[in-house]
Figure 1 (cartoon, rainbow, N blue to C red):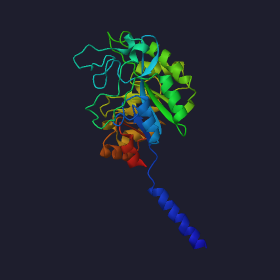
Figure 2 (figure 1 turned 180 degrees about the horizontal axis):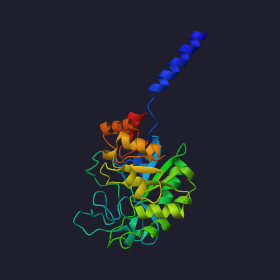
Figure 3 (figure 1 turned 90 degrees about the vertical axis):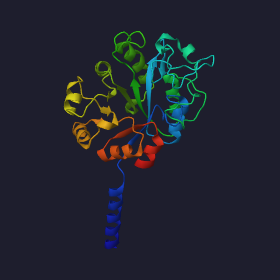
Figure 4 (figure 1 turned 30 degrees about the horizontal axis):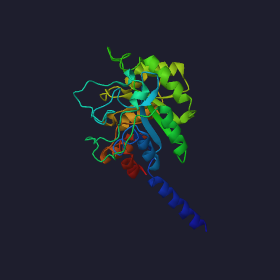
Length: 293
């Protein structure tokens, strides 16, 4: 009997050693390669696939409504005007911050063919309010879901405060909406704008914050994360190309989790797992699930 117990314990240990490490699967814009980005349809599809975390972006309308959109304007990649005309690259940009939400919601953002994601399913969709999207996902999800939500503040002279709010106004409008949903530690707020991150850290110290980066060149990771910010972020979220085992290990030694973006190709997904990334943000969460689970 003792031998059987020993063999059983050894087999269990062997199986445990072969198990893949837990990786948080994050659906970028709800899984933009599969469904129209940053829409309720995309989030529903991601939940049906049993993703861990919904990733999406926030902008503000002229009348102070917080809506879900990656771009500050109606992008010609996916946007159709209320009269049925297609927004083109050469057209003047139609910025969300210059329009009331009751005008924004008349544009379709789900029916155009998207060359970047040719297999994306086509459905009529609009840019939803953040509150409505979260209310839907909270009621639809079969288990608690996490949120990684980006405030799209950006320090561009001649545009900030005109085509999107200044960073303090941006945060002051968006964060209370998010906190009102009582998501607790299921909510992470991410941003590229160091000013906005420092402001949120000071005003809402309870927030879990993620520092998005795109210009890190593989140099001094400590200078990037410890010196540029006025505090240590909970997450570092760089482009996947700069991820190494060494910089992930450094982050982990400081208690910082790592969530690379936007990881779509299987070989890149596998490399992120091998490097020890805590989460993988992908336009194709189905591919990540197939590899990490």
